[in-house]
Image (cartoon, one colour):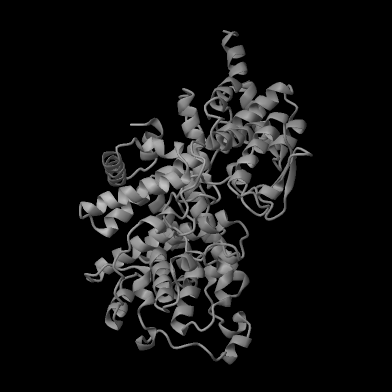
Length: 561
């Protein structure tokens, strides 16, 4: 099988998906008598003819329309992958609707089926809140696949004629989000690897059929099933046409028992801080109250007197220590809880604090040595700079090393932040909020980013507001690269370079700072401009670890006896 086809199959982690794709591609070669790799060596009109003949051959063998559409979609995905790798000169956009047969239209859902579906999502979980809001919007009967997937947070106020139930469901879902900017997608993936990415049409399709199966529905559910459903018979579609007078009253006055947890998260600027606080507070309430936090439960906790609250938190700390959690993890969870109590104290919801709760002693910056520059050089040789993904990965690795950037500083950069003429990049540093810091780039790094930017221009994704570093897989093409993706990129490069030490983006930062101290003979003030540490004491730890002063003194003592 062609090497590019093997790469296409291997990038799918699900064994069932790989097997289905492999069978579809083998079926193509069997019926067309041509290798699949020849598709990206012919013109697009010629490819249309080939795929039409392929569809006709499948139809002659009495394969179902849905199966034919899936096989053609597999071929399309492979050609799109070949295009992304620079092996094909054309994109397969628009081929499927010209070629694939039309399947039977989906039947409409009855009112009973709709109400049964609405009972499936668990309102106590974040996924359940998202799925319930998604179902309510679909049952409005006016959203197709592309329009629903393309909705952003800023579009919600513009949606007119929604029922009160739908508005409340969307508001409940958004109240648990920590990325509420207008351009953020309304519905996002919640799995670990794709957290925050826009939910795709295929993902929603699978989600709907999974809920239909749980609801005991036998028919296949699609977007068209909802569009054919008449919402007038459903209790949820009673338009909210009258503005309530209480809506003119500020929230803090209209509801003195507002959700304190939501208000606390809204008071934090960093999305990472919001996500960490929400997760750590969920751990506390699950551990001590055996349920996720909600406004009434938070008020119940804050209604305890000072000694009851301290006893409860000390019991929680003891549980974490017994579970074997690291000191830093224990301290972080306690810090989130202290922040909630301090915030509530400011608003008059409690009269005590948790300052008496002591954290665990932690030694900061234990190992700052990283690896030698020779190891970084070997990692930089790993990306294939003739490919699109190789150019992106090389530019990221150069930024991590030459400028000692943190991974969030890399993924947060936009196209407009890069100035190739002045050789600068504007980054949003740690603890700086939305304020940007201008950093200078070395010649190799500037050239590497410029070459990657040329690839973005080919993809028509180089608008100033677009992310500078994006995902290149077909399912998430154009989405901002995540911190997890940067972490995996570094690990893959380190393993390919034969480095045995566990590497991460921050380990490269440690390596760069240590190498800079070596190159400047320990000039911490000069290196502070590179590392952007607020406190010079932090750099002194790097310098002490680099010089290994303890080992030097130990050797002197050993020579005295």
